[in-house]
Amino acid sequence: MLKEKNKVTCFNRLNLKSLLVLFMVVAIPLSANSAPGHHELVTGYESFLGSSTSTGQTKTFSLTAAVTQLSIGSGKPISVWAYNEQIPGPILRVNKGDRVKVLFQNNLPESSTIHWHGIRVPNNMDGVPNLTQAPVEPGESFTYEFQAVDSGTYWFHPHSRTHEQLERGLYGILIVEDPEHNQVQGQQYDQEWVWVLDDWLLDSDGAIDDSFAIGDLDAGGRLGNLLSINGKELPSYQAKTGERIRLRIINVSNARNYKLDFGPAKTSIFAVDGNISAQAQNVATFDITPGNRIDVDLTIPASLNSANAETLIKVNNLFSHREASGDVPNGVQTLATIKVLGKVNIQKDFPVPSHDKLPDWDNAHNTPIDFSFEFDSRINFNFLWTDNPLTSYVINGKTYGEHEVTTLKKGEFYHLRFTNGTGLYHPIHMHGVFYKVLSRNGVKVNEPYFRDTALLDYNSSIEIGVVPLDVGSWVMHCHMLEHAALGMMTVFDVIE
Ligand SMILES: [Cu+2]
Image 1 (spheres, rainbow, N blue to C red):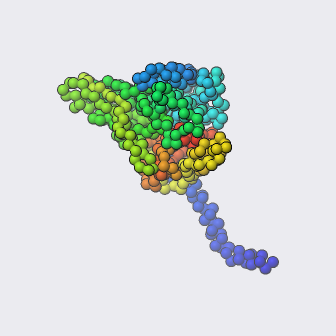
Image 2: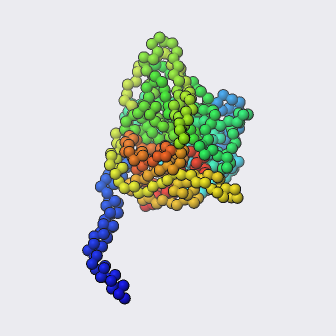
């Protein structure tokens, strides 16, 4: 009784203090939710995306996935998995505002789906099996249908056993033209090249190495021994001095990063992951991680060929695949050559395309962190007597399947933090959104573009800002496909 009385007295004495504390506890989250700038961050992003009015047109395509025989690199035909018997699969080219209808037929020996990487589609068209749709079984078909709301360079690939299906050759390109933007910018390039970067791990017989079982996956990611552009080894391109070329680059490799060097040619990256940048940057400054696309304005300098003889530009990959234990240089890998001969009559001098509505997210990194995600690995001591691999790759300690769902509200700004507890790279891809990198290792950065995939370097952190706008269940995963297969995937639900 005395105890109770004391407690009451104590409470009375601390009443004012308690009220103050209570006020602070209530007030802090309130101020966090209505922090100055949150509303502006959201409207800025929405204005950046702009609206998409329907063209009234529907573009219909058929994609059939099947085992087929094709020559990769310069070797003899080998057994690959491909869309429409070609690698890369077809380029689906549409206009912004078109309805896109894709009749997908699965003739593979296993189930599959198609994920539209980067472009915003309704959740039930996102192609994640058992989350957004039922797997498409062998012999069955599925129709994907969506409005092309975002212009730019996108791609598509299966989201079923992705580390194997994509590696065997299942990928294609989706290009969404924006006629309005082309007119505004006067984009009359002399040529357009689409370069799909991939590496292939071939065995001693020249066939695709078939170590795709979960227990066989390379923790460092599958790096191939044959580098290709559009399935060809060391292709050669033709250009004239003074030419301006629009180059769309897509990295579909399971694990390889690229940092490209074009020698004497002038390069300006003017779009990242489909989105036009506010400011162009040199191609050699950008880590093209699996999943990324960049659009490059490539100019062959007029000074290059004064003697009117053929000049050869080598396109090299300078990215050095490091490990926590130290840098492991690959040596320079030449991916392609550009033969320069002759010169253009009239040099195009239109400005490099740029986006004038990149929102001012300058203070976004000062907002409180809403959710943190630790990308890490876990040893499974039960691997001997269970189906678990020796090492799982986890987000906040959980593999896909064990994961906890993160709930986000549509139209709100979120500040997310990704940390890397491993000595390995993790390209972080979020479905259904574009995001902006706000800081790396706690240091504010100002990338002049939004993206859907960013490289989380080993033993480091990045913070991003994101405004989800489409309701549904979306995955976030490592796009180093061996890591995703070993568990590094989670789900965020966007609710009204
Ligand atoms: Cu990873």
